[in-house]
Amino acid sequence: MGGNEPACLITDEDPAMKLAIPKVFQTAEHRFCMWHIMKKMPEKVGRQITQETEFLNKICKCVWSEEIEPTEFEEKWGKVLAEFKLQDHEWLKQLYEKRQMWVPTYFRDSFLCGIMRTTSRSESENNFYTKFTNPHLTLVEFYMIFESALDAQRHTQGQFDNDSKHKHPECKTSFALEKHASKIYTVSVYYDFQEELEIGCFQCGLEEYKKENGFEIFTIREGCRIRKFDVSFNPANLDSKCMCKMFERLGIPCRHMVWVWKANMIEYIPDAYVLNRWTSLATKTSIFDLKRNILEACVNFVDCKRMLNELWSEMHTCVSLAQGNEEDLTDLVKNLKGLRLNLEAKKSSNNHENNGSPSKATDIELLIGATLPTEIVVKPLKISKNKGTGVHVPGTGSDKRLKGDKEKAIEQSQKKKRLCRGCGELGYHDIRNCPHKVKENCKL
Image (cartoon, rainbow, N blue to C red; front, side, top):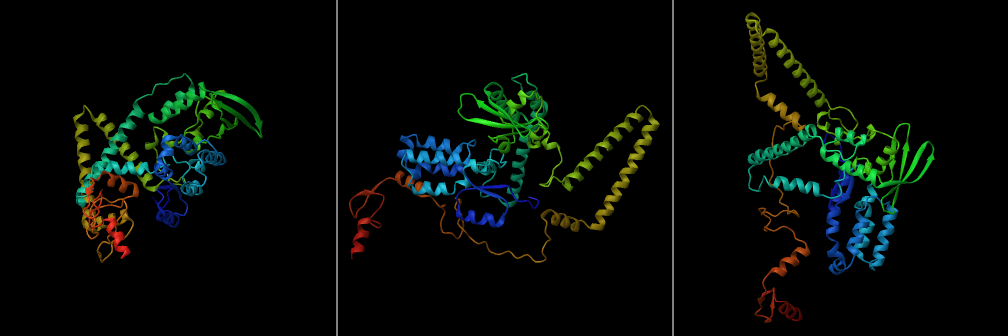
């Protein structure tokens, strides 16, 4: 990643990962996957209370809400647990103690594009590549199929780029803000903004207005909702900030900011609130590092592309000027052939000096960022049984992956019961592992 650490890492509640990540990534934020945590809720709390009461609905509304403040979340959490008499539940206590690792309200200021609350993004990528690969591929086959999978993704991305360039989404209002958004955003992001604009224009209203330190404070009421949102607005530079923090989280202006802009007769989205990553020209611009410095490789690519465009333009101009005059065409062909021969001779000379292989080795070393060792020692693989593996690993003595208690119980219940000759009862054991026989042996 160019020597830069990721902004955020999402994992399950693996204690080993919790210890390892801060040691490797000092500045990255580590979060737990909400989906994994909420999936365990019925098993840990009890299916009776989750299926026969409103506990699960109320706790989900409390946990998944990104608009509430941390203090409000803690208050609602306590009320829900008190209502269902779960204050002393050990697992919920542990969950509450590490709430800053998984509840969205504690990282509302972090720009995570709205997708970094669960590990679904990485799991979706795994599922995508699983469609193209299998455990029995050779290294060469895997490389070729992996390239095909990347081509499929590039093709899909190309279709999206084409739609954003040539298709114009339908505007539902006559506001200039919406027309401006339809020109700058990609199609999918535009529809997200369109939803915010519709609600902001037709369902939001002003509850209170005041001025503080050069800022205009608008208290916005949204439909029949009890909650109100304060938006601070600076007319001098159009600086806007809403307490819902949707822009900080998703990079899309919220409905409350849109209402304020409309009330102030602003006909375009301010540049500070248009993220390049959501625009239709995002893939056409230069690539910058985290310090906003343009990458050297990107500069070279842009320069080469510009020179190629100039070359083609000059060639087409020369052909157009020589067209219809046999003498001019003959001179042009002669000059082009001479240039071609000179370029071929120059390329042949360079290949002869480098002798082919050193150049290739140098390219490989530059690509991987390390020099090729003079002696290569291949050691036997250290066999380990990973928690997610489902294939046979030679040397482990087992073809099965690690399973949880819940999965074991489900598999056990699906097995057919058999008659034990030791105790004469129907069950999931036989005379060799009969529990009555074990008790008798213990007494002896």
